[in-house]
Image (cartoon, rainbow, N blue to C red; front, side, top):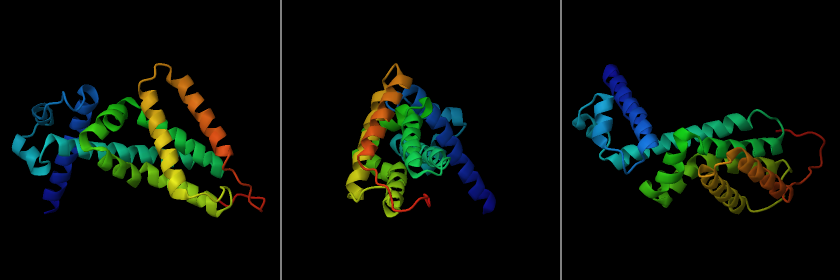
Length: 203
């Protein structure tokens, strides 16, 4: 049984890896499931045993991309002990990770169109948006953020970050455009900054 479980996980892992390469290079519409099956060295029946359709396989790939982007956000934000720097670094990490070549087309272009906005937003909510809300909540609890409705602020910021990523995905001068976006974001955050009545940041 253990060997069967391990083999199943290995098969799924191989399918997702190969599919991710194809979806990145060719896009969802131009990717043939037969090509993925052939490169993975599997039969079509084996593929359908785990994924009922190309769309379902794409969804699994998108879920992985969303998860990896969230991990990059968490990693970059954790490098600083300053709450505001954590927030800025996390936002920057989200945008830069989203526009990476291996993520951009799957996450920003094909993702919403293939799985639908409701599903795409639910995935985003479970990963990067969840981290954003946690950070904002922690800052508010510690007195570093004004008392504003967290859900409204989280969705507002998340929407802005997604739109920034979409713009940069098609922007030729990405470094300059990213710098401009982060400068705007820093100025925006200044309007919500609050100084707590204590000398040290406990976060």
